[in-house]
Length: 109
Image (cartoon, rainbow, N blue to C red; front, side, top):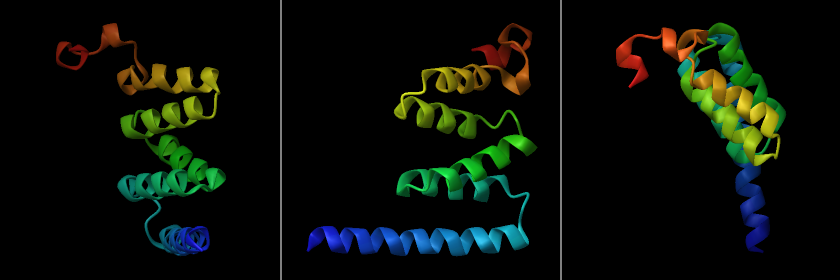
């Protein structure tokens, strides 16, 4: 019985995500914070392809978005894809795509 309730709750949450994502596509395509929230909700609830869509969309517009790079690194690590996890971790360590040694002193600390 509890499993059925948990599944129903998850389905309800997924429905809310899909409704929000449809609204978002219509209204606010450039809102990085909202994109990130939708991507993280999808990661948490399971539709990996939808999560990837939202998170990759952020990186298309803002390639150095640290929370997204970190989330993707963690995601790939959890899936056992060390190569992709390391790729995103390296990107997260390089502010604006530059080598850390070229970054201002305040960023390197």
